[in-house]
Length: 173
Length: 173
Image (tube, rainbow over all chains, first blue to last red; front, side, top):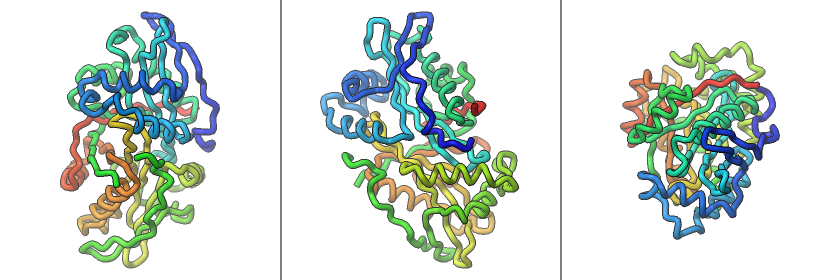
């Protein structure tokens, strides 16, 4: 695709209709931060990595995400208007695969009360459709080896674990 | 880190001194494209995915990469001034892990004639140092399951394959 993926207008806000109800999907705002961090913390891995009592670093990160045209942080609201889902898309232009732009998905979370109702699958299907609408050729994500439920979830959606996901923690200077 | 990672000045150009010689490292320019695509094609997987005879889509992709402050496409030159290495860094601000910015590495290639001389490891060590200098907390990449040599290479550098890498091809619209 010739046009930069990030210049296409976004198809948000929208509504995801799933078996458990209608969920509103929109771009995250700073006011959503406490609820988003709540979701990140309510997770076996996130509990050790995230601390909702210190909001300042999350506010700085949100500002960087919101100002970066390659990033799209999306939140989902339940019929009762609670923030129950989050994910982040990163649009990565690249040379390989014929100059394809890829979309990377990070920080996918659905509130425990809402799991199994189809919201997570609808969020990911929306992300894939959005990637296609923006002219991208590939959607990718990594999932911790310990998240067996997540692996089944992504395979059901058609994702293939063709790769190993390598991480290296570094000390920010 | 409070400051957006992408606002820190880049530590390029530079020189990587390795056992096989001194290699110049700099940001890629459009004039480098034919040599970069040559590297992408000279690869068991890239050979099926990339076609150097059609330069137009690569030019469009290069323009998008070069205009995106979150992307850094780096090339390495041999002592004989041939373009023999390439990799792309993407700086991804995020909320998880305490609002950490992560660096994703894509399209790592070293010319077959230069493998085993230490250039690839020096490129990746530079990328990790650059991530740290920009205030990032994590460096990540995925590697196709079939690339056994690459897996040994990344493990030697300290990367841990803690994750599975899922991909889904989509049709650009």
